[in-house]
Image (cartoon, rainbow, N blue to C red; front, top):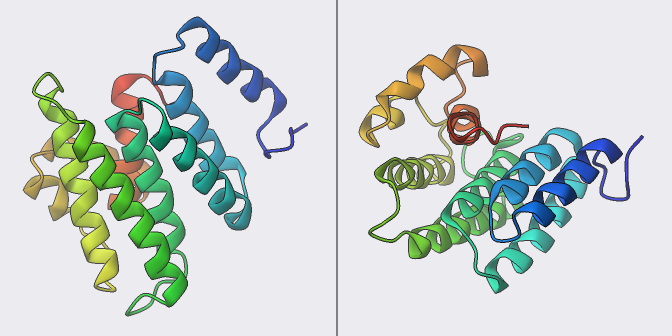
Length: 175
């Protein structure tokens, strides 16, 4: 059974509970982004990402959530990408870039260096997709995240999927 947003009801209730328990935390947001990406159709996901981005950008925001939004937009843009991006794919990549830029603005000197590397890697992924190329695993090394190579096998050697999922796994926020 799913709610109006396409998320399983049990998952939606768990997310709402997490947000009530930790209203200033990002765990609820991060889990919700992961669940949406796993359960919604591309059209539903695009509308949901747009709505979530508006809410997130108006609020306090976090680099973690901005990174998750960027990953969602980049995954949508990559669908059916062969060569140069179409107008629609370029629009999605622009939204992914906006989310990365927003995430970079939220990074502070107190932010853990690992998160900075994830944001840098997502930027590289977006640049590759904009050039019509599939992001290669070497991005992980160039961004200072060689430890993520262990996640590549689980993600069918998909650099974008690895980059999108591994911060959540590492931080215990995976759906």
